[in-house]
Image 1: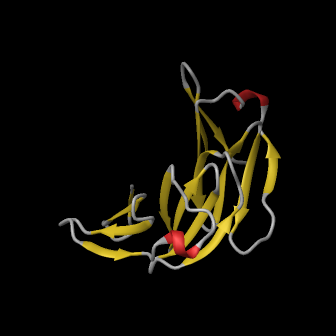
Image 2: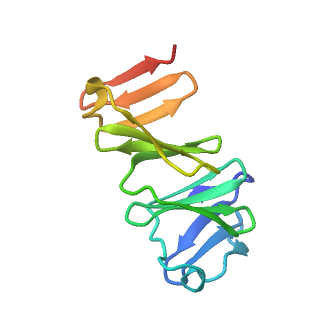
Length: 146
């Protein structure tokens, strides 16, 4: 479940294999075609993100499916097993084992960078405009961008 840009709700109906947009009154506003008919591997999303004109469905076993606001599949990003996934602009970022991974829509290859030793055991990592927030077992640390 994710909040849409217009204060409605995105949900993924696994039984029908459809991404659906639901209004605040419970009405169905939009739905995709049955994704079983449109693709080889149907997602079982762990996370849905609405950002800058696109809806991202993330399934750690299959990858990231990118839809426009009309429910048309635009892209499939073959990045698996990402933690702390987020979308900044048109770039998907997250961590995979001991590295940061990023993929910008329209590019062909993901980029990778090693994680600093100080944050490899973090519970969660959140990248913000002012820096990186890192949740550790006993504290939160902020690393500023220079």
